[in-house]
Structure formats: structure tokens, C-alpha cells
Amino acid sequence: MSNGDRNITWLPPLFTNAGGADVVVGVTADSEWFTKYHTVVSLSSDLPPSMLPLVQPGYGGDYPTARNLIAYRLETTGLPSSLVDSFPFFEVVQLAFRSSGFWAVNAAAWLPNFDFDESFANILLQFTLDKQHSQSDRHLVAKYLRKWETDRGITLLRP
Image (cartoon, rainbow, N blue to C red):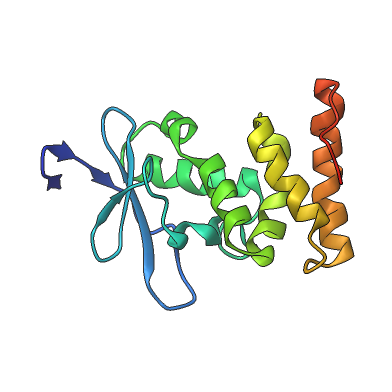
């Protein structure tokens, strides 16, 4: 299917969201990812909320399951499963932490799979300090944040 000057290969639906809509992604030959709902949207510039269920059990779930889900869809379309390495998984995690506690907690288990920067670490710190989240959720995120700090030999400034 041609979309403007891009030739996007659309994969079978990743899942059907709670609203009953299929969540579909596609990829170009130069590994640029897109999704379509009402319009075609590049995942490299504006990740839509429709990608959030990737971190939710029953849809994508844990990181290996989500990777395998996309790799399988690539294979069934005749594309190399190695293209999964170019999928913007970390952007899904970032969106989850910008969206709500529900999505953030689901995405927290994905954190060990990424080498994030101090800017994102500060987002995690703010999550751990925000009492609107349950203590167990704050502790879960704090566990990954402490590991990140220990691995780098730094400690983020806390109030």
C-alpha cells in the first residue's frame, strides 16, 4: 500500500483494543514505523495512545511477549523478524509514564530492557514521589530507578 511517497507494509493487527478497534502498525523499507486509525501516523514523531496496550497483560504484556508479537507479525507478512529491533518500544514506555499510573505500572517491568537517560530517570523519580500512586507502585518503579542509579554510580537529587 502506498502512502504518499512512502511504501508501508502493514502488518496484521497487533490486538483489538478495548473499544473494539484493531491496532495496526506498518513499516517501510528504511525501518520507519507507522500506525493507522483514522489517519496514518508516524511512530517516530507522535506515538498515539493506541500503542499503550502493548504494555498491558492480555494485549502485549511483558517486553519479550510484545517483541515476539511484532516479530511474528513481521514474519507472517514476509518481512524479516529482525525489523522488530527498530520498533519504538522505549517510546511506548515513555508515553506510558506521561499518561497515567495504570500505564506506567504496566510499563515499569519493561525498564530493565532500556538504557534510558537522566531526563527519563527524573520522570521515574517524580513518579516515585507522587503520593497519588500506591505505595507498591511507587516502590516498583523505585526499584528500577535505584538499579539505574547504582549501575551508573550516581544518585538523583531528591527533596
